[in-house]
Amino acid sequence: MRAARHFSYLCLMFLASPWLAEPALADCSDATYWCFTGDIRIEPDVRVRQCWQWLPPKCSSCNGRSLREQAAEKCNQRHEDDCRGNCTATPKPFRWGRLREERHEALG
Image (cartoon, rainbow, N blue to C red):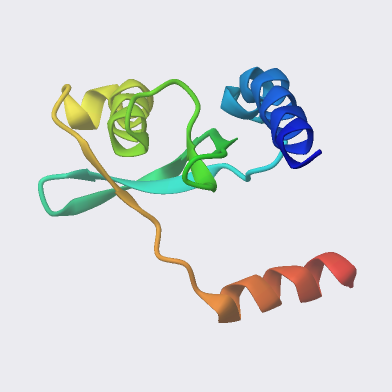
């Protein structure tokens, strides 16, 4: 009986594994990155799509490339004249106070 239950769990995991391996698009918000040329920050910021990954469980890149690499590429595209292909990207620091302000503004 115990072996049959163990086998059932293994079958379930085998059937679910392709689904678990796929990134889920809707579960994660976009990551916001600041663009820099040298030490000078260039606005506006860029956003990079993130997807949920199961192992280890976290929001991460959707296509296997690093989020920072994708953000730097977007910076170089968006700020072509300022960057000349040499911009870097840094994750925007998260501030709880700002989140509360944005929610308060959205709720009116």
